[in-house]
Image (tube, rainbow, N blue to C red; front, side, top):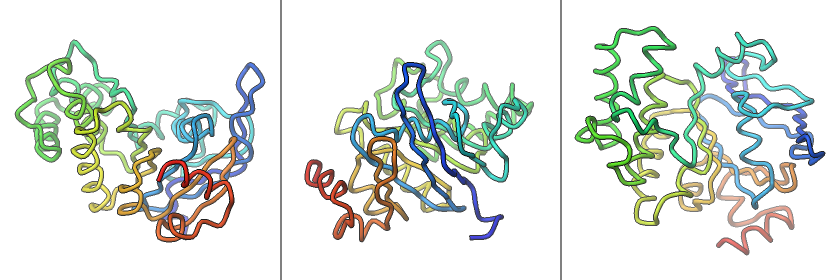
Amino acid sequence: MTASQLMIEARGVEKWYPNGFHALRGVDLSVSKGEVVVIMGPSGSGKSTFIRTFNALEEFQAGSISVDGIALSNDLRNIDAIRCETGMVFQQFNLFPHLTVLQNLCLAPVLVRKRRRAEVERQAMALLERVGIAEQAAKYPGQLSGGQQQRVAIARSLCMEPRILLFDEPTSALDPEMVGEVLEVMKALAADGMTMVVVTHEMGFAREVAHRVVLMSEGRIVEEAPPEIFFTNPQHERSRQFLAQIL
């Protein structure tokens, strides 16, 4: 992997919470351009905490992280630069309820990237078309289903033209019948070459789309393998236990 291909590099990442809980224990991970990495693990294993360190939503106390060649540090300029290149889709959508769908998409590109509103609105409508909900542009989030809201959240992230997308359990808050529509959008993004790190327990998505599956347990990565190996011939007993519980 050359330096130009490396989009995320985490080395020896350690995190403690103020109560003394050791959430991340020397975690290493590299993600290359266009790669889809799925992170799995039991509740409390550190997977969501880990990806939230990539854009400084969580602090870490030791180790190093670089994103698209930018070293993550306490320098706010570096943090802002990384957040401009890294979109994040959360479990709970995090849409502004008092803004329409279109306004939710346009807010950050206009305020942060200083782009012209007319240009951003054209791009936003194209993205809403891409995720299949252009007809909802004038509605408010509360008027949409959970699946529609999550597709808005994905389109909002794309409106900032990120080079990397992070997904933190994007389907776990959805009713089962809405999960498929969100996963289809994510599959299309992967097919288009978007670099993605996805925390999820959606086995079908991981089998079909991931280049690598990572299993975390107790703040550590215990296994990392292509899906065809991870799901059929896991090398670690902890992986076998985890798969036995969820498959």
